[in-house]
Image 1: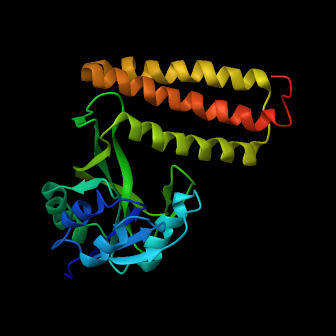
Image 2: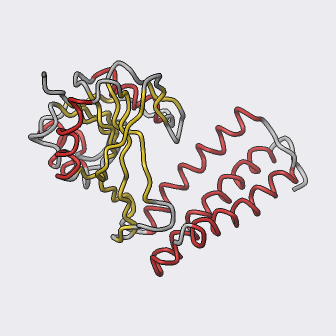
Length: 260
């Protein structure tokens, strides 16, 4: 039986602090590394190319499915593992893939858990330790969705029961910076697709949904077990929803709610 090959695809912009270790973790295991770079202004491209990655530059359009599909179009492996620059592939993950890939001809997608870290702490509770379907078969899958991109496929999905580590937020400032950007994308997508909503509906979503997300994250999914990390994360995470609806209200307000 022919050994399955794998391409690691990384989306990056101004990630000189992360890209090197991300690639280092897959060297000697991945058959190739493809980096889609959003015209970084730091040393991201230089580092990636020096480490042997194939780098393609593309102006980001606030639609991550475009970049994921660019990875798919430039990959040559049988399987494609989609990563962010702050992901870290573990030895256990690599060994498990090598074990099951050659025996998964009926699968188009393998989902795995992302072991998320917040301010250096692994967040086992709070709903942030979850599965993502980011290991896909080339030629069988395309991605859709601007911000929370998902694979579209007709085959079966399986589970690779090992984790990839994710270290997105070493500081609260980084969390706020990133989600300020994401909330703008979400609000603009809502406004372009749905137009204006009634003001009462906006208030309801801004208040009730924000409180619901906090309760779900901190109480229902036991974020309180993470101590102060869990509390801070729950507040910031739920506030992101408020920010989305506040920005959506701001867009509507220009021509819909002139006196609010």
